[in-house]
Image (cartoon, rainbow, N blue to C red; front, side):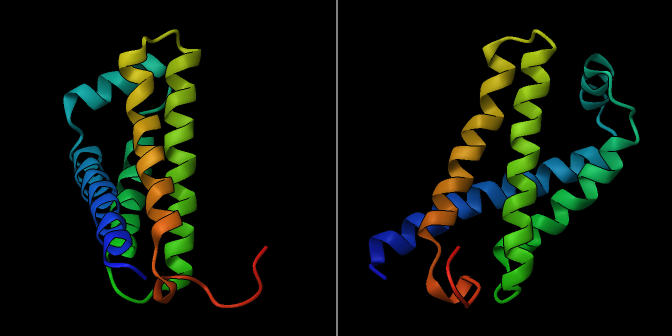
Length: 127
């Protein structure tokens, strides 16, 4: 793997990992703006506890060495979270200022996934 590709991988992986770790902490802390956003979207507030827990665990999996299968689950979970967030805001009639951030993070996540080194991939036949 080239040095540039490895640097790109780490830049995008750290951006996603840190943003999701911080977001998970905010979810679990019950930050008032998040509570109001959940209310506006029609989701029960306890969903933040579920999301917060899995965001923190996913961030740890993305950033930690090893854990190849858990990394795959983390990538998938974050993709579902970002797509779901963007769709929820779009269906709620929210503006681009709320729809785009999860799509930007989805792009960063996708770049991280594509650039990941071989030692972070599951072994076996490709799909």
